[in-house]
Image 1 (cartoon, helix red, strand yellow):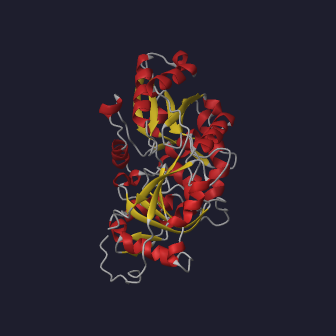
Image 2: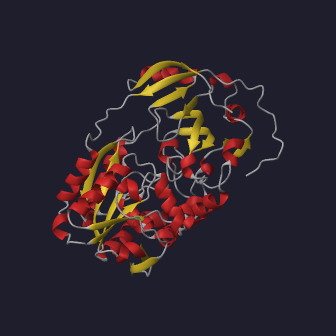
Image 3: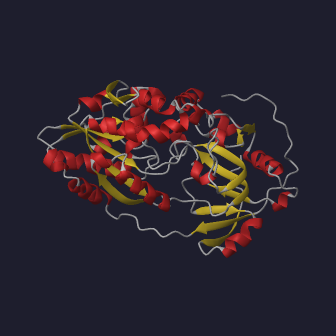
Length: 424
């Protein structure tokens, strides 16, 4: 995108506040042997007794931002082969990757998942097979290559969804219905917006499981530092059911959050699909601009500035509509085809997050405009927080008006002064 318009200069007289570096203290006990935990959970699932020599097993991959997805997937594939199976990877990511087989293979490569790194073939197709339907006739689709396999092992992180709240959100059921459902499954589950996600996800997952193809699931739980806190094997009957619901509650207790309730300006260095499905995690920023859906109670943020787009998102700027102001640098990197395909496939849930924010020429202009518009008569009183992204929240930069809250919070540590580097 080439921007040739003349930007208004309304921010030159707005001073940027000094910043102080703050660290959140979290208890963290990540798994020390991720491959070993992977093998142990697959053994505990009892899959060895179900695997026959040469059995073709499709292993799902496709969710972004999972730190240990490569060692987990590699260990699962090695265990399946040792048990006598012939495993292969199938991309399970709905309509992502431009809704093409090559695009999805390339997305896997950007995650570090290749035939060389995992040690098995990758078979990618956008073709689907209908495996059943709900009582109202809603069809349920599965990736054709996965359906032609003798069994499917579903691997995914269980976490809070960024568009709705329910007993089942992002996790194994979603990987089945949306991931393995390819573009067809994604469009069906999103066509009634939040209601479809909340009410259809689990029933559609059960229809897929009733096909007999799903061998089980391997659920990944991550802590506030994005480290693997636990791996849990779930039998098919617990996917989209009580077992997965319990893991979701555990995951919500582990997630990172901003430590302030009221923020005037939040500056986010980068947005991207590798950070969150919506570019920025709505549970972190407290914004859920979906008609009829209440936003999280906290935090309350007046203005959000996004400075840049991550390279790993390949131009997909889904979620940029959650921000109010951005930069010319960000806008120039947006792949509107990929972004709009993702947003429109998600229906109303995506439409609300796909609009381009106000674009200003530099990061400094964007931040200054946010401070000017944030509702504070005196810019020096603005409660400003700067973060790298919504995944990495251990280190924050804050303005002086927030320092009393920092001093009063035993989970926050004051580290010293910082500056506004990188505002180009």
